Length: 78
Image (tube, rainbow, N blue to C red; front, side, top):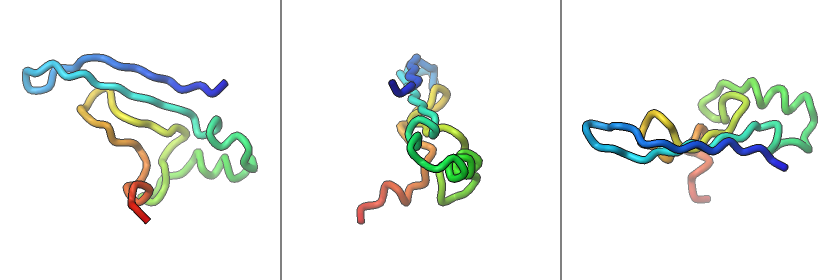
């Protein structure tokens, strides 16, 4: 089973109570069938064109956001 970490809470933003969420999954889980050397490189990525760090993250527990930690180029319509 894949291990997605899902959390939610309510934060105060300028006097308003706002529900927020965050979902995380390790790249190791998503890319489990890839070569281990390539996986190591992917987990160490620090780039404007890549998903930085060892996890894929959607949302935020500290900001009102539904953005992810991937570059916007991945969102572009082809």
